[in-house]
Image (cartoon, rainbow, N blue to C red; front, side, top):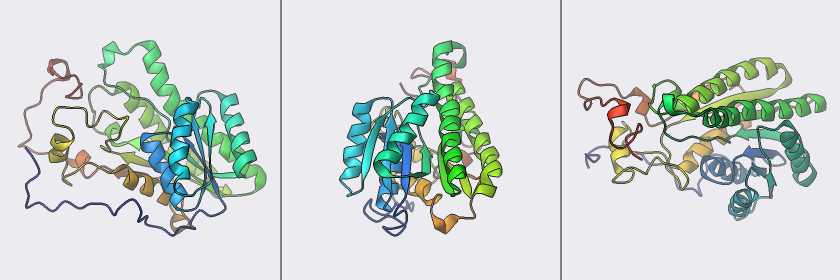
Length: 293
């Protein structure tokens, strides 16, 4: 079914109308992991709209450079860096390079991640390690690298993590990613408590469905319309509104916010009803455990 025409569906403002002044992050440098595309690029663009200098880190330098070109189009200073967040030496080198080119890093967006639908018993060891290590090890290593530098300089800063609302819903086909994102959410609270005395805040945004070029959210038959009909808000998210919320958690306007996991999913995680469609076990779904291939 489609969303009835009489339902009120609230839309975000256009991309060129960010919810904060253009100088909000002036003089600051943010490092965005996996910022070359998708949700990471949305984060990078949002920080750029607030005046930040942006370092984009990715395993593929080509993708990082593609994202950097889009950020540069906003007029922001930007630099692309090649590196694997699972490797401590890569992380340290990325921060060194970002600070050499753009200036001291005080903001961090942990976005790098990987996910694909597969039943738990079919997840290979390599697949499990790839998904969990990027989200868990990568978030930890990058966060600690920033913290060490800020503490040594006697400065505060902010970290925002890209979490996922399905860590609470038992979404099928996501045992690897849900485990990793759950650890990331717990880490968000733990690090926030430990680093609060140094003025370093840590928050996360648990995103719902935000279709983009490299996502599978719109890959099912009929595109995103069936997804929108399933969401109480009547629509999937726009990547730039995710980017805005992520950047907002790092603004001076929210200096009292730390250790929080903010759910941004249009109410999808609240969708519980006696009149829901019949449940089809993941192994019996002809289109795969997510309901589409």
